[in-house]
View 1 (cartoon, rainbow, N blue to C red):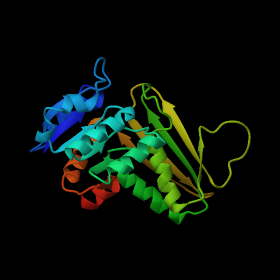
View 2: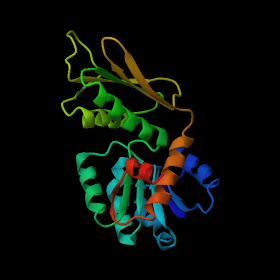
View 3: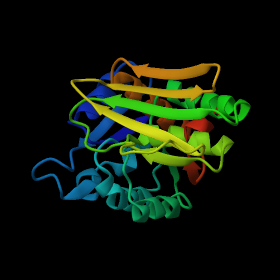
Length: 247
């Protein structure tokens, strides 16, 4: 599996490179840093000489480059793993259009453990229709977006079991919670890689589902698994649920 890596020199780019060295048959054939100084000539220019030699693109750069990256993927007929978060509605629409032409993998979190947790959240919430639900996420002090894409994905898992659920992000002020509220709380401190908790509480008991990432390597491993899955697929939009079914 020959990989074009966007975001080559970033934290996650380095993790992907190290992880790829441990995966039989995987190789990074080219890498770019489109967000670095002088690197905003974009992926099309930097990848132009080796696109025919690659099997898949993995992107850990920035969501603002989604359009250019997908243009290139369509031009070369390459599957693309989008491992960035924070896409705008316009960028999400562009992803949907590209998925009609090439395989696209999009997930808020590339940990298989988070994918399993999302499934468990949906199951437990469906068993406790009257329970109060709170989501707490913790990340390092350099993370810019809040709440995290993963916390929002966990909230969407709640909504699958409870369509009337309403997100209450960063609750503050005076007043009781309403039954349909799902509190989403963000912590930013130190060098926390990622901790996500979902509390499902009734008057008599509380179930807490928790996932903790010990290193960013877990996301690199997941992106490579997604890439290996994607190269066998036809055009379409895929996510961790599709990968879990194959696993």
